Image 1 (tube, rainbow, N blue to C red):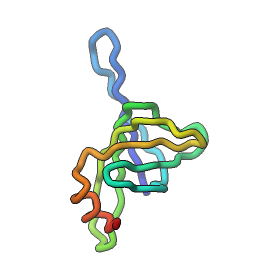
Image 2: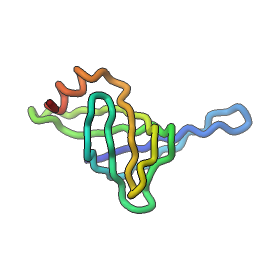
Image 3: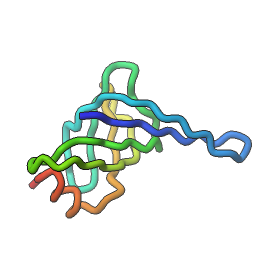
Image 4: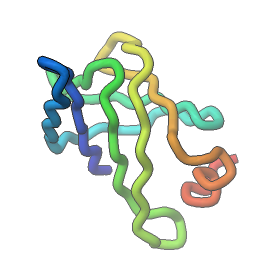
Length: 95
């Protein structure tokens, strides 16, 4: 699963946007909350926007944007989805 990290840094009242591609793995989904683990040294910062690109069970390409809210340790973060829970479950088929 490809996860694109988009950082927004505020410097001199200007938004400085940077984007990197990273690989992470969603390890838990509870409603709109996702826990995602990354390789060592690749963990995004709090408030970074992450775009998760994947295919659902029907083979349809999807992209979900989440925002990092908490660093969990062991290279994992907790993020909140910006789309609704019902729409997210329809994409991923979670129960």
